[in-house]
Structure formats: C-alpha cells, structure tokens
Image (cartoon, rainbow, N blue to C red):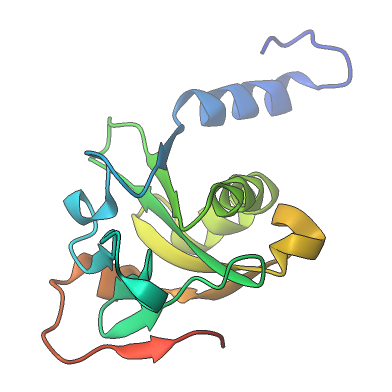
Length: 165
C-alpha cells in the first residue's frame, strides 16, 4: 500500500501495510505434516478411518468435540508466534473445509479485537460453526479460549464426549 491510495490517509495505509506484511496464515488439513500437535501438544484429532462417531473429533485437554456435519462443526484457530522478529502465523484446522473458511472470515472480521485482547502473544480459540448446511461459514460461535489446554500435554483422563454446547 502506498500513502497516495485513494480513500486512505497516509497513516492508515502505512499501519495496514505494516500489519499485513507481518501476518501469515496456514490452513491445516486433518492429514499430513501440518497437524496442530506439532505446535499445540494438547490437541489431538481422531483421523482413524473407522472411528465411528469420533471420526475427526477434536480432543483438547480432557474435552472431546465431535463433528455433526452440517449442524455442529469445529475449527481450531491458533495464532503462533516465534519471537520478536518472527512473523505471527494464524493456523486454521477445521473438521471440514467450510470450518476453515469460517475461521478465515472470523480472523478478517475480528482481527483488531483479537489484537487488543491477546497482543503479540500466541493463543488458541475453538470456534463452532453452527448449522453450516443452512448458513454456510457465516454463523460462528467462540466455544472458548483453549490456549492453556492446547499448549499442555494431553491428559490421560478419559475424555468427555461433547456433541454440542
């Protein structure tokens, strides 16, 4: 962005250019080398092909979040930082493609609020996409800030099975 862009004053354009140049996004699928446990040791995703109702369920700490396609779907939204000079990375890891899209939209809509709340620190939020069959990626609820649970080693206690809130 430049200072002479139509509709922008110089300070706003410089601020946005600086902010955008230091932000990356990573979309993680449920298979492959980019699963959250590499950066979020307290997160497990059931990728077993014959997992039944727990297929692609998230386990965060001792809580389990099951996929209910089209009705109740989850996505982990994490901001990871690697020091003062490193670029922050937003990690979106959802149970379905539409949940990743919902997380991307959530960050775009709430970036300034997230920055005010979390500053330059890493965080992890669990988002729930509600009734995507009717509303697509547009209705998103914050289940909670799961930063501590996501960054801690997985507990050995039996997980609770949460289908909906």
